[in-house]
Length: 568
Image 1 (cartoon, rainbow, N blue to C red):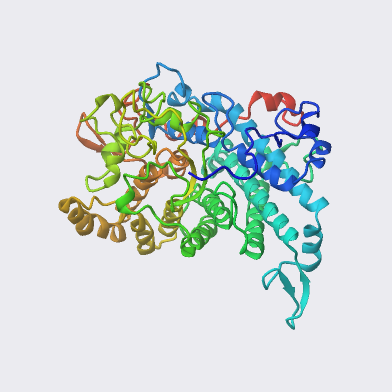
Image 2 (tube, helix red, strand yellow):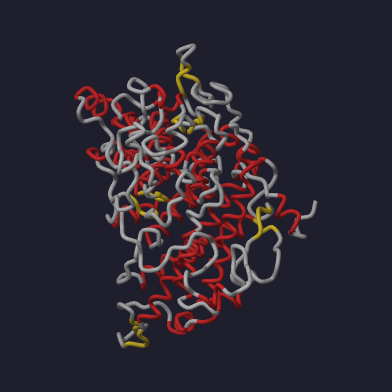
């Protein structure tokens, strides 16, 4: 764990500083600032961006603790995560697939609350910094921080303050792209469902679009989905260009601060979800262009070699508890000051910490999904097989555990500090994006290569039979058998990133291929989406995978009642 950074990390979306008497004397403002209050702050951009980042882990209740709670909603909703006991009640609605009704309000306020402060940063850069004026006048630097003309003469040299303002601007654009792409994934049906419903990209109204230009103009009408697409693309590509031009000598104080690779990763994932939701043949340009962009941006991150896939020797020892892990691209260093305690991912999932999971409210991998993991795959050991302690059967006791207490569940050993870090993005995501994009572009050899970049590090090397099965049979089939590859791809999205918040979008994006699993009663492989037998609700029941309304959030009443543009 890293030491606490020099600035105080904020616990709410509001931008505030401890000990700043003038600010504390201001009238109450809820979770956002009015422009006049914001303008009086020192270090506006740095403080504001830290405020934005703090919303990623801000706690408002036991079930609402920022992005990692949202990750849990999605993984429970698609049933990859099973709540095995509802006695404590937490996350019961998600286990019962009622996330749409019970979480939309929190999702809405979480992302739009973040958006308000993001737009303030962007507005401040454009209205109150020399960087923006100089950028419009001279353009991007091409030689360090220098702008050169055609003859190589220095036209302008950006100073250190300009450079720092540029980085905060790029961070804000990245976070705005992240917020709107997140809203798309939760509040908009898949594009395939839109087309089936008679909509297209120019006539489907999704949600209000707020930017620095209209954030003070009151409630906005619903934007068309193509407007959101265009803004996300513009924000993230601009951010990437600015990071590339100004960020070579900049090193953020923590991995909580987004950088060029996080921006590329967000854009790659946005294009992947946008593309594959169009259920058309691979030669359709609606599919091909987004897929090529998804591949391009994911590949750019991979080729920088800044982050490494978790190696085989560390698969069972990382505990996903340290932001300094080389596979982590984006994450939060949890300290005593910033821990959510029980209101945290660890407080609900880690059986080695004082948690709801430890006392019986286990969050486990879906049993059907667990059964699909090949015997040669070391990741099967991420989940308790029940042979040693049946209380925690199929819980992720070897994937998520405290660094202080990695093995014991004894009362005297249990970790009561909750200092495991929060992961938001890993390099493995980029390889999965690249593999999927290549597959749907008809590049199966390349698709297999990207997927095997991960799988080569997931073989149980201590078992010679496992190694032989993988190298002799499993791995070669991925290049030659399209059906074998797509099933392997789906499985690896669900297993590699289990508990990291990608399950719902994998489910929505790839259910046209249906999740195959073994029916233990008939001992036959079914091409259905069925819950495992370890769920506390509707054990082993078939899931209505094509009922899009179940997996798309509704705009909450708080917005429809407030926004005059929405009406009845």
